[in-house]
Image (tube, rainbow, N blue to C red; front, top):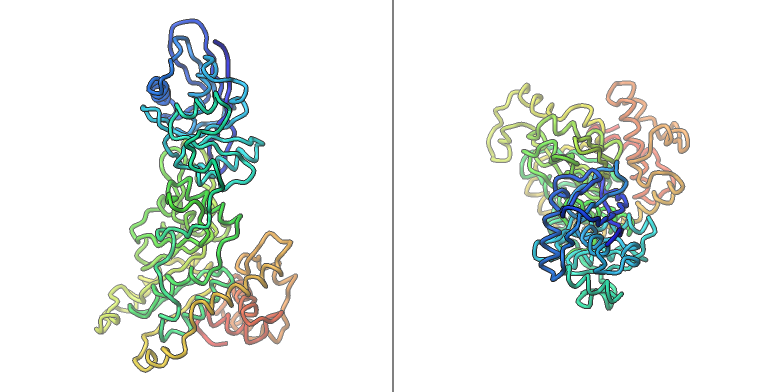
Length: 515
């Protein structure tokens, strides 16, 4: 009888912290005390651990057991520390060798029958273990594929506590580990839940300006506002935007997958998310659901689940103005920081926002009826989208109804989405090369002062936007937005620097008024 230690990971957002789990067995009245700022789920772990050990054919020590979680001032959350505490107790009792388990990290929740149940946040937890120099991590078998995304870490996957204890005594991975004999194939397409509906950009007929805006948004990471009558193709365009985006890089894929892992939304058949996600929440969504929230530590919201992908708000004026204005911080910073009673969490939220709206609440034009909304009703309806929010949206496009002649003519001239996606990828590559060595990766992220001072345009190219500034059509912030879009248009045209035609088109895509 004595002292033993193991290691586990607790998460704050998607940031993992190494936790030392110590078990001390001392003479005295039998009992189990847990110290080190555990939450309710951890406090209940004592009964789960005892039942799991007994139902695995092991003996529960009839001693006074003290479990210490260090650092003691760091709040510990969730049930992923169950396995680490159970192994520490058995190592202190001499049931398993103490030396090897003192170097391993254990993750997983225990069932009363001794089963290792899957837990959220395994990927960021294994990443944290790797960063801390821990080379061997034990996870539930259901989380094995996710855990093996992290290179240079030996993953032991077990379905039951008894199998894990046998493996620890024999010094080898559990024999029923499904991935013990080979690497995991991570070339699995993202689940349909995470991607936009299938369709090609060529399906959208008669909206050349809308298709152009979608292409520009994809190439430069620019936010987009589509306004038009029902049936003009706003939703069709938005749903096809992810198909124009290239696959995520490996680092981006791990980042997105980590968010979904923490949220408990990672499909079992998708160990890694390689395609940009697509999220389209209902207009009744609350601030907590959109930005993130919940009791204790906040969980990721829709803006974080859309990280490196598309967040589509259809019928945007139907959303609460409070919900819409909550988007302003992540639109600027690419992150959300949420303070709750259980602590402060921060999640990545670098997404491409697409807003869609009808011009009035009755939407009569889409039903072949005359609109009865007064000008005041129209203004009040669209004013639910605040000026500060729209000021952060680079592209604001009006979509008009399509005539029969336009539909028939467009069938022969629309570009397939694959052609546009190739052009988008080349434009993104040009921007990435230009901004290499800076903290930014897309044109939409470049600060205006840096763009104006380091990459100035000629006076002749700026003639149209200078007139728009003089007439009040464009604000100083709007000028920066127009310049960013102009650089994207130049990248799509494969030219080194925007000319007058690119700046004027960027101004039109923002204001709807020709220069």
